[in-house]
Length: 113
Image (cartoon, helix red, strand yellow):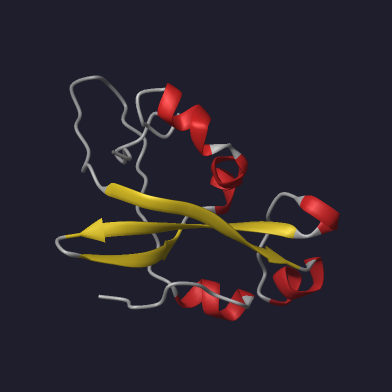
């Protein structure tokens, strides 16, 4: 289990385990439910992302957003990286999630509780 609680560089972000987020093709398929304790992101420079061959959407001050999630597993939480196309999730106010039945607004096998 990864004990990292935050990352400060693109190379550290890349070393985090990635959360698998498969798309469900029908309502008969099921996914794994995980408890997402916290969602955030690393603000990275375009140069740092380009060096690692990463593409991500721009965020505040022209920095690129690399999303992360703290996931609870048993009695421990660990930091994971999220796919870069989920960068919007890291920017959404938490109150919006709570108002939407505590779920990440995606058709995916992962749901926060």
